[in-house]
Each structure stands twice: as C-alpha cells, then as structure tokens.
Image (cartoon, rainbow over all chains, first blue to last red; front, side, top):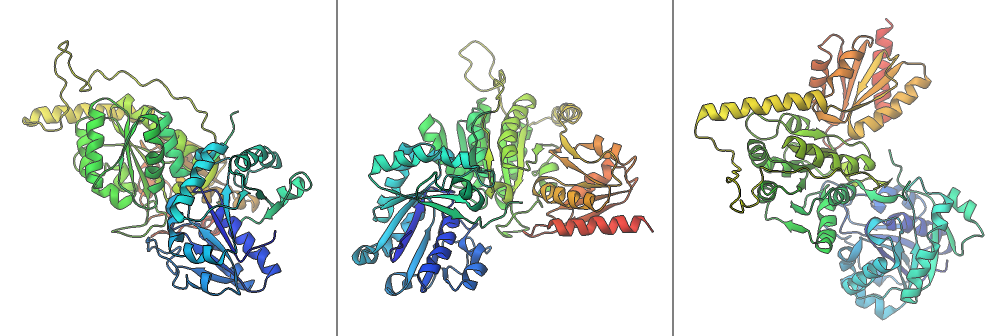
Length: 220
Length: 354
C-alpha cells in the first residue's frame, strides 16, 4: 500500500482498528523512515496501541499516545504532542481513532489542518462479524455518523472482517461481497483486505490487496 | 449451526438480554461495563424498548424495582462501586420477591479502586449485597458465549423463583472479544399473576412491598423465602469439572481465574502431576456436591482467585475442612498467570511427596 502523509483509521467500535494501525505502522516504517503512530482513542481505556509500545519503539516508530492509556485513570485524555501530527510534515503518521462517531469527535480540532494540507487517507475499518455492522447498509450508516462527527470524508475501506483467533480463510472470503457492497454504496475503493498472517498465506492470490496481520493481543 | 459473530462480553450480555425479552434497561456508565449500556442505548430505541441513563445507580435499581413489579423482564448493570450503591435496592427487590437481572462486571477495589478486572465482590454477591436475610442467584461466566447464555438463564431463574439473578463477571469477561453463537433457546416467560398490571375490576389488588408492620408477619416471610432458597440450592447448582476423576490436587476457580487455571492444569498434567479443576458456574447456590466428593480422594485444594481469598471459604465449607485448602491469588486488578498457578500446584505437589 502507498501511504499518504496521514492515514486515519476510523470505524465501528471493536472492528480491530488498533491491530490494523500497529501493523500498518510497522509496514510504513519499512517504506518511510520518519514514521509515527498516534493513539487518539478517547472512548476505550483498554486494548490500546500502548499494548504494542515496546515493539513500536524498538522498530524506531515514534509513539504518540496519552500517558494515561492503559492506566487506572479512566479519562478521555489526548497526547500532549498531538499537534506534531499536523505540524511536522516530514513525518508520516498512522492515526488510530476511537470507535464510532464518539471516537471520531477527537479529530475536530485537527480536521481543518488535515484538510488544508490535503495529503491524507481516511479509511473506514469494517468487520462483517460485528453484530451491529453485519450488512453494508448498517456499516454505511456508521460511516456517515463518523464523517458528521469529525468533518473529514472517507477515502477508502479496509475490510478487517474477522472472528478473532478462530478466523478461517473461508470466513474472510465470505465477507468480500460485504466489502464490495459498502464500496458500491459509497463509491469508495476497498483498499485493503486483512487476514492474520497464516490465513493470508492461504488467501494469497484469491483476494486483491491482501494485507497480512500479526495479531497484537493474545487472548487467555 | 448458525453463523457466529464477534462480540465483547458486555455486548453479548446486552444482546442476550434483548433476545430473552428484556425491553427495559436502566443504568449508569462505569468502566468496565459501559458497553452494556452503550449497546442498549443503540438497540433499545429501534425495537420499541426503553433505555434510560438514570441520574445515579440508586435511581436505576429503583426503576428496575418498578418495572419488575409490573411483571416485565428488566435489568441493570454496573461495576463494583456502582453495585455497592445499588445495595439498598437489591435488598428491597429481595424483600418484595421481585425477579430482575443485575450485572456486575467487577473491577479492583476497595473504594474507587481501579478499572482492571477483579473478583473481589464475591462476598458481596453471594451473601446478598444489601441488608437483611436474603440471597441472589449468582452466575459466573467464563467466556463470551457464557456471558450470553447465562444472561438468558439468569432471566429464566429470576422469573422461576421470583429472585434477583446476578451475573458476576469481571473486567476481562466484559472486555474480551470472542466469537459467539446467538442461536440459543429462550423459554417462554411464565405467567406472573402477582404483578401489578391493573385489576381490570376482576381481581383483588396485588401489592408489591417490603415493609411489614407486624414482626411475626415479616418473620413468616423470611422463613418462607428460605424454604424457597433451599429449593434453589437443591436444584440449581451448576459447575464444570475438568480432569478431576483421578486428581490428587483440585483447583477451584471461576470466571477468568478458571481459564488461567485450565492452562496451568494442562501444563501440570504434561509434567505428570494429577491435578483437576472444578469451576463453579453458580456461585450461589455454591456447587457443594463435587467438592465434597472430590475431598474423598484429593489430597489438597487450591482456590485461585482475583481477590484476597473469598470463595476459599465456600471451598473449605464444602470440603468440610477435611483436606487443606490454599490460596493462589492476585488482587487490585492483577491477574494470576498460568505460570503462577502452575507454581502453586508444584509447591503443593512437592510438599505432598515429602
């Protein structure tokens, strides 16, 4: 995937945005040295990019995150260096945004600078196996809510449909028509379809723009 | 088999409640259970139900009292400090013999504590939670699938016995995402001739009340309630046994602690240690029978808990203190690792060979 200066990942709660963000940052770092990941989640105090902080920092990726993420201080705090994202134009950034429209409100303050610079991808991360976004229409409804909240239009779709660690190649294949349906309704391209690395090997050649994912969180 | 969906434990509770016929939810947000309320807020208006964010936990539990009086399926959810606030209402529900479902997705305490998972409300849940002589039926899920299934079961048991059923989960159960099948049976809601549904001038007034002016009348109610509790204890205790038949060491653990323990049991078995696991699914009634039976052949019990040791008292009572029961625990939001549990098993195992 070719990365614009800013890649914004939004989507319905629990679709796997953070996992995609961390993998994208590692991928981007291989292509562009001055890479950062920004955790702007103000909705969920758990399952943050912070879980992968060590790996990200060791890879030389700048880590922009509230110091209160993953702590007991349950407040919607933003990183103090948030404006670096829009000010330092030599840096390419993956932005991990909180779920739904509530999570997207955070973009309001930097949306004018993002649109003025106009070098961004605004990606809708979708998962057909989440109960409230099981079809294209309900997913597009969430997309419109997010756009209204943050004032930035989507430019593409990331099909991250999965059932967690149980996901099979067949499970991913079955969701291709779902992602195409969203594409048809919105006129936006499906820029990536993700799958866990071993599943992606099976799917190689069967799905366009396949993006292998390393899963960040291990479930007990 | 129907297709699975990927859900958080909290979402699974909300969806299962809706499928069980619950159309009234009252709550107040608190981490780590907020997704229950958020899901209800999204879905209830679309299906003609009521989602109401109350001004406090106390208001919410009293709204539950009101809807339960009308004979409808109703629920509230919270996390540890919020459940303490609901304590008075829980006692009133018991005193008025009202069926309701209350969810506690526990976090570390005491006090405001923290937002990480805990099991330290075991005493509060199994001994009632509020004042007076009463019990709640307490269900302890150990997977997202069980979060859904026990929610349905909770409504059914609550209606069957006119009691409050509590889902006692923890932060990990609420937050973890797992594939879940929502293709489960929901039994028809029983008739509730006691409910305040309007007499239509065809019957005497039904009265829902927990105040008794004559002490002997109050006493009669308490005795009658405990006869009902004996019936619940005889019929509704549930548990899962894992590799207990030949076990020298038995682990007692519920919820997330049971999942961690199961991994430790598997590892210990590989190393030739005969260890098994009893996982209570109902915490009240506590499944005494499997513990009593296991005490006939096991040399030691280990209670694995995310608390300073609460269920351990029930394990000691159920085994009649015939064999030693030790504690393997973390507290304050920390989770014991499989390695820590394995170390506890080995310590007992090696001690036993002396």
